[in-house]
Image 1: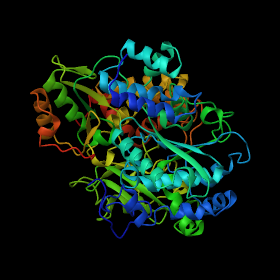
Image 2: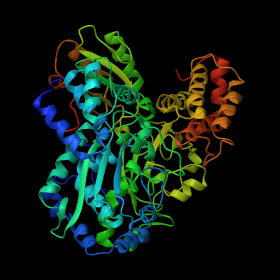
Image 3: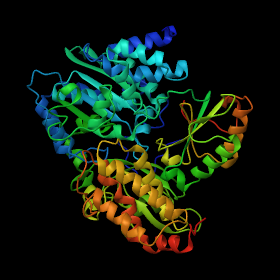
Image 4: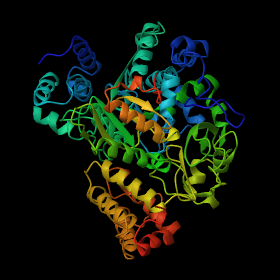
Length: 440
Length: 173
């Protein structure tokens, strides 16, 4: 089973219906608070809904962590233009596999959130953009949408109150870049997934088809029904500071129990996630922790000394990385850090959309130099060359990175190489001196 | 160009999803599902989709060359996609990839001579907590072992369907 049994360290808001019989069906959803939040929201003003989301402190769960209520408030609600809600289910940041579960096991939770978002900003059409590889999720969401239409939760007269909102799925066709919101909109318009320049192309003003658009991640939307039902304050009571609520953390790599765990933010630490017997269960075999990636491969790595950091956006940000998409990849003492950094760089090189020179050219150069170090043809001066190239892609090689490209993919490329060289310089040098990988 | 009634019905649904003057949005979904039926994206299909969504064939070509899942040449009947990105790398994805390529004697995006099996080294497929993971066509297989990949490759090459290879069970329902 891709999800684990509930355990005492988890706080289950998003995943509380996982494991129910036929959890995908609208009948199961209705029997467990389903569409009650929509009934409630239909009796609220747009300002009241947006305000409740603002009070909740909910931040986007896709990676950037932008406050959701604020994002919604940017949409010109009084504008006569058509407005759109677009759901980003293009989950492709390596390490991340939580939206898949939210869609597979509780599609109506997301759909209810989308309809409420539509009410809040005055949109009458939504699209769920699902990555092409998740074909079976297309079928699940299509079925759920049909059920919602049949029961009057979608259509021209929702709840018999004259509310109009339509929803449809849209499939991607294999492109990491389309997870970037403006590239996703281009793709949804039937184009290559080239990110748009901001300004002026902020989706809230100029989004899908040039109209005001909200783009939210699946997990973000899945939180909305609970927030409306229980109030923003109840949500904000979970977590701490600017990291409120729970997150579905995806744990991967060298732990005994990889999996997706819904944990209260800030109140739980990386140590809990990685080592608690009911969560990660510790490092496999008799190995020890060497490093971990705290939030998808775009994020700089952390050392074992940082394992007591709380799972909070600011806490991780202040320590020089990001919580990103909430995916934690654990690497143990048997891991070759050159190989790990090389593979991540190869990924960026393959997935660069090619619009901006630093990303398109830089990723390829970095990948080739990393490859030659890993495979025994490296030179000592390659380390400086790598850092110089990283500096060209993102001046200063700091976090958060300086932007030299249209989207954030480019300046994220140096994360793994810079982390690797700073934390494991000797390991890189051993590759050069021994003319190959000591782990082979 | 003629398609099955099921695909025509799907096309009709796709075209109805978007505003009347935004039919271009249906292009990628139409190409994806038509490719499943035809086997690849042919010149004829490019022209047909272009006509139906109201763009030039050049515009369709420009788009389809961007996306890794849209193919101008036919793949194998069973397209085995093995992830070697970080989470899978850490748990043996590369070994699975090497085993599959050596057994079949084909490489990345290549097809066996009989057209039965093709291989692709894919980027993250969203199964990191169940690594190493693979997809055969659109089906997911999690926590794949070396013994399982051997059975899978041998079985597919010998003419079996994935359902008949009981050592692996797809996780999506």
